[in-house]
Amino acid sequence: MEKIEKIFLIKGTIFFFLLWLHMGINIFVWRIEHGKFEKRIFEKTMNSFFFLFFVNAILLFFPYVAYIYATILIILCFSETLFYFEYQSLFTSNTFLVLQETNVQESKEFLKEILSFRFFRNCFLLFLLVFLVPYFLVWRMREWNFDTFQYFWSAIFLFSCVVFLQAQLPKKRKRYYSYLPLLRILKAYSDARQQRKENELSLEEQQKIEILIEKAENKADTLIFVIGESASRNYLEIYGSYLKNTPYMSKRKEERNLFIFEDVISSESLTAISIPNMLTFKNYEREEAWYQCPNLISILNKAGYETYWISNQSKNETVGRVFSSLSTSSFFVEDLKNNEEGYDEILIKKGLEILKDSGKKAIFFHLSGSHNSYAKRYPKSWGMDTIESIPGQQKEKIKNILQNTAILYVTQTMC
Image (cartoon, rainbow, N blue to C red; front, side, top):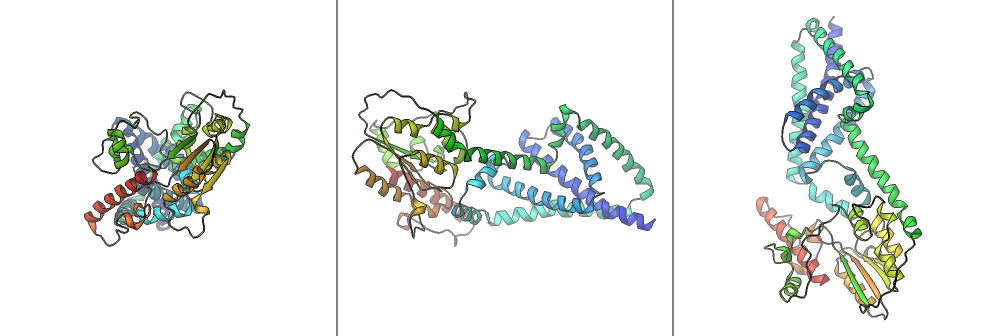
C-alpha cells in the first residue's frame, strides 16, 4: 500500500504540474483576449479543465513523453508570457515571421534591450507562480487519504472521458484542441512557415504578371520614395506631437508646401507584410496574395523610369530580395566593407550619386529608421551615445530622449 501511495504521489506531482500549467496559461490568454474576467472565461475554464484532465492523465502512462512535453511547454509558455510583458502581444504567426526575417544585428540589439532588470524580475515572479505554488499543493497530497480520494478522482476521470469523446465531434474539435497551448503556438509557427514559403515564391510570381499601361506626359523626371521604419506618427511633430523632431517638414507645412495625410495607417505591424501591401495593388477587398498583384516598381519600369532600391535593411529578407530584384539597380548598406554603424545618411550619399545621371529615375530609400537601440541609429555628434551608466527612472527618461533624437536624425537626414 505504501508503494502504491508513493507511485501516486510521483505521478500526481507530474499530473498536477501539467494541469496547473495548462490552466494557468489558458486563463492568462483568455483574460487578454476578453479584456476582463467575465462569464465566458469561467465557461471556458470548466470545459477545458475536464478535457485537459483527461489529456494529462493519459500522459502519465508515458512518463518520458510527459517529461519532454512538460519541458517544451514550460519553455514556450515562459517565453510567451515574458514576451507579452515586454510587447503586450502573444505569440502569433507574425511573431515567428519577424524572427525569421530578422538579421543578426537586429537580434543582438533586441537581446540587449530585453535583458533588463524588469525582465529578470518577471522571470523570478513566473518561477514562483509556475513551480512553487504547485509544489506546495502536491506537498499537501501527503496528508490525503488515498482510499477516499481514489474514488473522487476516478469519478472526475470518467466525466473527463465523456468530455474528451465530445471533443472529437467535428464541430467542437477545433475549440477543445485550442485549449492545448503547445498546439496553439505550433499552429502560429506553422502559419509563419507557410507565409515564409509563399514569400520565397513571390519574386517568380511577380515576374509573371503582365502590366499594360498607357504612357501619359509627366514632367516629373525624378521620383523619390522614402520608406520609414518603427516610428509611430504619434511621435512626430507634424502630426501634433509636442516633440520637436520634424523641423524641416514643419516649416514646409507652415508654408503650405507639404501634403500631410491624416487618415493613413499601416496595414500591418511588421515590415515583411506591410511594405508588400504598400507597394502593390493588394488591399482588403482583393482575395489574391500580394505577390499576385501588380507592383509599383514594375509599373515604373514599364513607364520608362530607371528604378533604384537603396536599402539599410537586410537583403536576405523578403522585402529586400523581391523589390530589389524587380528594380533596375539596387544597393544595400550591409554590402559595404568596414561598415559597422550603417547610418541612414549613407543612403543619401548613394542617392546623390544616382541623381547625377540623366534620364527618368525613381529611387526607393528603405531606412533603418528609429529601431532599437536608439543610440545606434545616429552618429555620436547628434547627441548622447550611451545610457548604460544611468540608473532607474532617469534612465527611462534618457531613453525617451534617445528615441526622439533618432527620429530627429531620420527626418532631418532624409529631408
